Length: 267
Image 1 (spheres, rainbow, N blue to C red):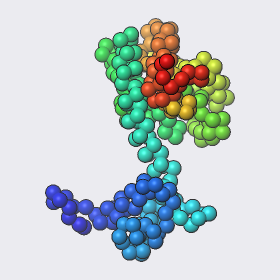
Image 2 (cartoon, rainbow, N blue to C red):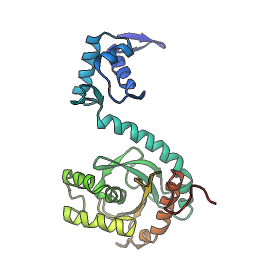
Image 3 (cartoon, rainbow, N blue to C red):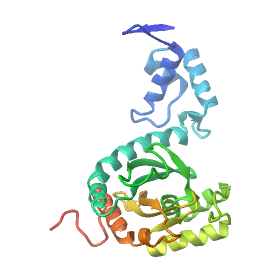
Image 4 (cartoon, rainbow, N blue to C red):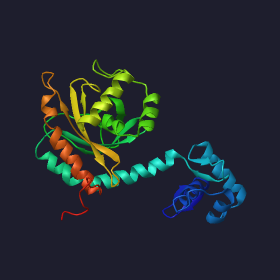
């Protein structure tokens, strides 16, 4: 082991692996063993062992066409998710605070992570018990309003790939367990511009979500309002569809998206 300031002990091999991974964030998406050895100042045999260990751990992958190595989708998505979460925090703070002035329900912002939704922002309800997940928590996309929105706005091929890989497990009597029914639900989300979850993930809970777009117009996240259902009546949440969609629009605007026909400024 090597010793670093503060008397903290670290494994030299782990430090070397971290240095290898950092090299892929400096502009080169593909690197070879020899080049990595030169850059981080280790022998080629050490670089070879570290690189293939990272391949075994599915953090790097070999590109057959070039013989070089690159980050796996898991590693690339990790970086994208962290960057997206920071951008969303900055863009969503004001609009969420504004939405809070008209509802006491819990508010979430979520992104898609594989077949799950990952919650990156939350405003807890001050008047009701906790609902759904904490920031950093996740849930199956097909069970939630945010997940339905994020699935609905995927490219057709990517949507079908994810739906094919999903196992639709029943959580409540209202959970959608048919992929045919789920596809129909996603078509409905795109037509109406928002998604609804009525007691599908948890009995007595309802939520409504709308899409958040990035600068290019691609849907990158969803904002939702969630609360407890009263007397099996989801109408109070449904009446918030327009405010939630307007909130999503404000967040999208803060991320740089402009509706077609609108300039990049207010003039």
